Image (cartoon, rainbow, N blue to C red; front, side, top):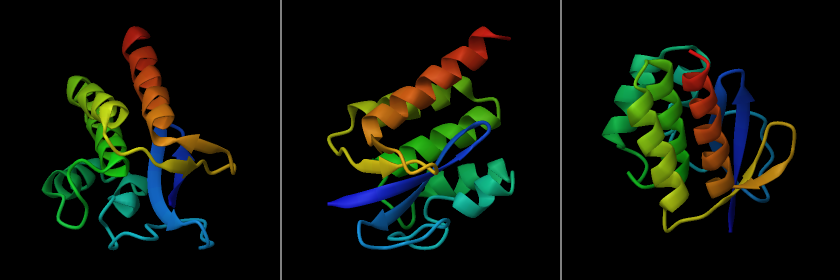
Amino acid sequence: MKILKILGIATGLMMTATPASAESDKGEIGYAKGALAYDALMAGKNEVAVERLEQAKYVQANDPARLINLGQAYARTGRMGDAAVMFQSAINSNRSLDLVLSDGTVINSRDAARLALRNLNNRVASR
């Protein structure tokens, strides 16, 4: 089973994938470089991230890591409704993966998507 690593940032979750035996603290281990738009998201290049993630060249369109990162990119570009759809799609996905937060906490991809959706809803409500 794959374990994905999520690197938390102030505005949300960002995914990197890593096989359980691999050790890395950043990047997209287990995916083609750029597949999850990790570097673009970390650099605040949100439109670039949206473009890469929408194209889904190197990752399946229904991959929970892709869905959550695309949701984060949408939220950052003001597309809150689209972000909510991506998070809900990750929750409803037929794939469920174990994720590792940047602090080492293990969380299921559905739980990570629920957390991202909750954070999005709180952000919208506080406006």
